[in-house]
Length: 81
Image (cartoon, rainbow, N blue to C red; front, side, top):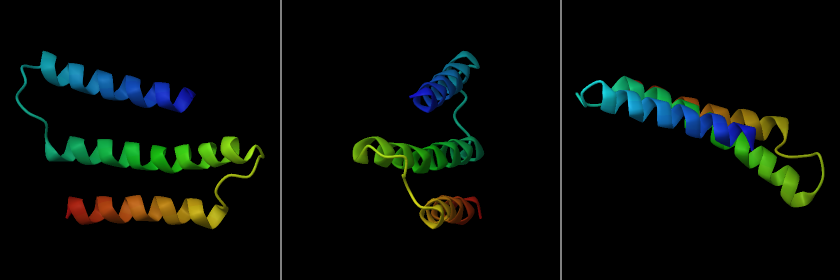
């Protein structure tokens, strides 16, 4: 749950800063950083959700976490190029 608070606070701060700065628009690079942030947080959320849902300390396996992070990083790389 702490991760959700951090993500929401970051998104709230980002969009408030955009509005306060005059609303000049959001750059593509900042959206890419937000995508990477939310994407990797999503992998962590799935890991934690599986732990709670199955009521045991095993969430995603090590390779599944790496695969999720690699998928997010690959999409980030494709969009950034």
